[in-house]
Length: 144
Figure (cartoon, rainbow, N blue to C red):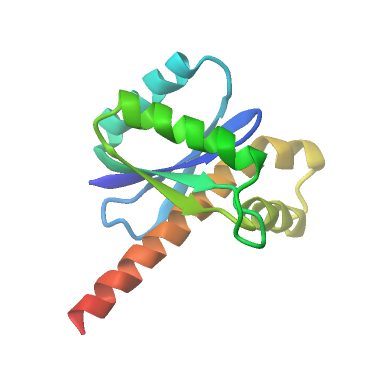
């Protein structure tokens, strides 16, 4: 079973999927945030096609650890998913992910236009990769 990572932004939703071993996150696509029923339909397709057993949603937490207005919208989205899907939905701290995604694209000399198209799905992959690394580290500690 795989994991689906989501970067829930104000205009776009970035998606990423893990490999079958839940070791590596891969960017998939960016959805334009419009009707939640349309988003739900796409997420159900991902769940079915990729055999997803958990969704990881990045939570925009401020540097001091508090939740601001953006986090409230993300909480509402997580509640929506919990009410419409029969799958585990996990909230994951996404501090710095968009900034890291943006900086890596600047370092790769991508144009501003290209960066704007890619940043959300790269951020989704970073959120998911951080979560996978956490799970794998936790599993490694159990084995010791």
